[in-house]
Length: 146
Image 1 (cartoon, one colour):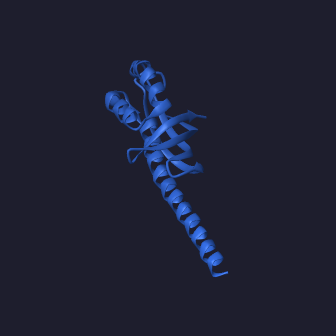
Image 2 (tube, rainbow, N blue to C red):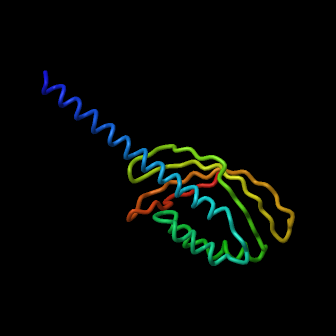
Image 3 (tube, one colour):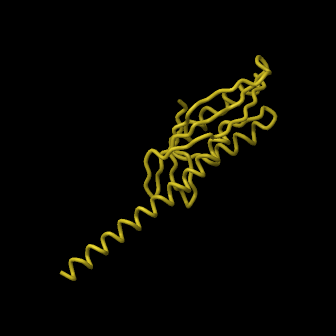
């Protein structure tokens, strides 16, 4: 009986430790995802190269490959239209989490202006972001605007 209780206590302790590790990972990933969503939704046509460098630095995997292929065209369009935006995350929700991968839904409010619409327009969107731990850093591997 004592052996069974000791084994059960060990199992419960292990499960609680793993849950704690996952919770800590989720908190870290959400903080990184919020920071990254702000980088994605804030841009200034006068500082486009800096914006692109920050976005590339926070990306990995599928998203980094897609962004590397498309950022040149995106840069041109944003510069041609003198686009500017200020975004902020108003809410975030963890959809799934493990110690090395966390999926987050972020709700963003963004003020957008450009040469055709110089008065800022408010836009609301959600971003589904998968964060992966790479060499101790949380990086975005998938980003889907909704």
